[in-house]
Amino acid sequence: MHPEIKQMWIDALRSGDFKKGYRQLCRNNQYCCLGVLCEITRQPRDEFGRDVYFNDLLDDLTIPFGKAVDIPKLIAIKLTSMNDGIGEPAKSFPQIADWIEENL
Image (cartoon, rainbow, N blue to C red; front, side):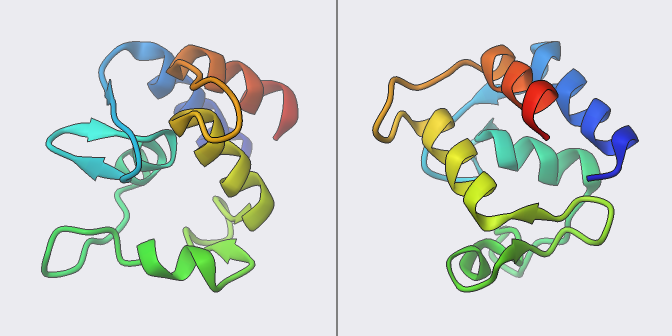
């Protein structure tokens, strides 16, 4: 991940500007941590307003954000689990930002 995009993502998660949501990238102005990344990198959406890569997440090895933002599938799954509380208590955006800062 490009260092500038990583820092933008961390800053956005810590900013308080994004309301946390669960189980969707973005729904009713509530975001998962990966949805915040989509928003700050202005990823395209389909005709229904969904991020175009949403269904590809399960099939591809990386989320196709582009070379500067590629995230391995296992990292995306870890972040989704942290966001949604799958197998562990859900983490706040600042906690997720700390993990990203230390691990990506």
